[in-house]
Amino acid sequence: MSLINASSFSSFSDLEKSYQRDIDFRVCVQQVNSSIAIVAPHGGGIEPGTSDIAKAIAAEDFNLYLFEGIRTSDNYRCLHLSSTRFDDEHCLNLIKNCQTVISIHGCRGDDEFIYLGGLDKDLKQKIYTTLSSNGFQVNCDHPELQGKAKSNICNRGLTGQGVQIELSKGLRKSQKRLLFVNLIRQQFIS
Image (tube, rainbow, N blue to C red; front, side, top):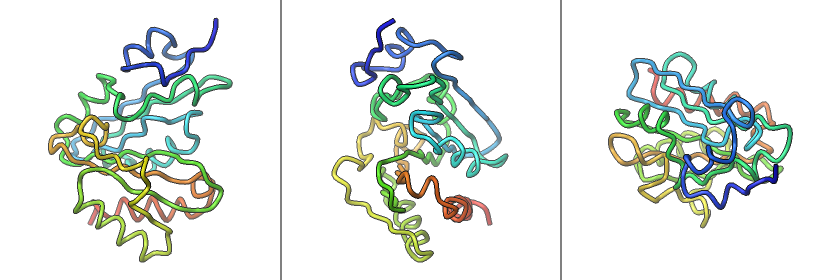
């Protein structure tokens, strides 16, 4: 079977026509009584470390959605459906009644840094302030990682505004990811 590049897919159903659930990818949904959803649309081998970080943030307190690449190779190329085209019905059904949606992503870079995006300006500013005051290098100005499209998965909850968090490869591998998880959880648990 020849590999089809995920960039050619216009929707999740296109991806499902080319790749098989539980062979190429898996979907994990945790629904709890929460108005908050944590989403990792590029988990498993697609953007390594994002699933574990999303799970740690959600724990048993928040709704959780994971789309995980489980291929032995080429996960990113085959399964990285852009956040503006990510429309798996399991995810949309989970987040449609959530006040807050935070999507966890991975980006390139061996240094430890974070890019924030999304349409929830207040929460984004709160997260920015918390992370930067705890020693994280945080930026909201990456031209390609703004997360401002209404169709972006982070902005498809009840309010139409969410936060997209891009974590560098260096940070995803660092012990500082534990501090990051705790700081994000503290935004919602008092």
